Length: 125
Image (cartoon, rainbow, N blue to C red; front, side, top):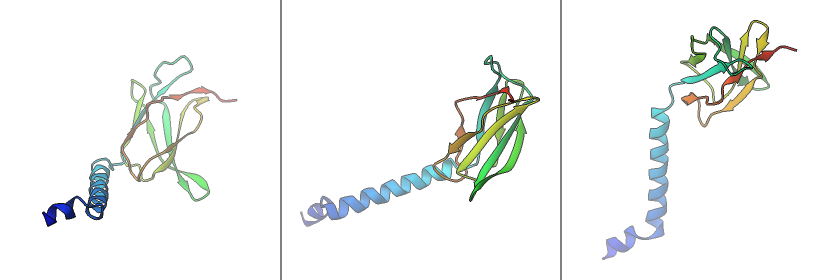
């Protein structure tokens, strides 16, 4: 009877819930922190752009510093395998066209992420 009262008290339940939540979050981070970043590039008409250059920049105190570049495949998809940061910018370029820089905030460093909104190329002004 005494153990039941202890286990049902807020002094046991609150720390137990916090401990379980923290443990679950750490397991989630461990399973999703490979630095994978995927997305796609389209032109102004909405068609995939093959061979476009995608630039990944990371926030470095005051400025954005380019960390990696990759090219899109035949379907306009790109992938970075080693994103080191949690605050990044992506920009696509192809000849005289470029997309606006897109800032992406991740929950933790190296979080795996699929960018659902494609980078849209537009003529440079």
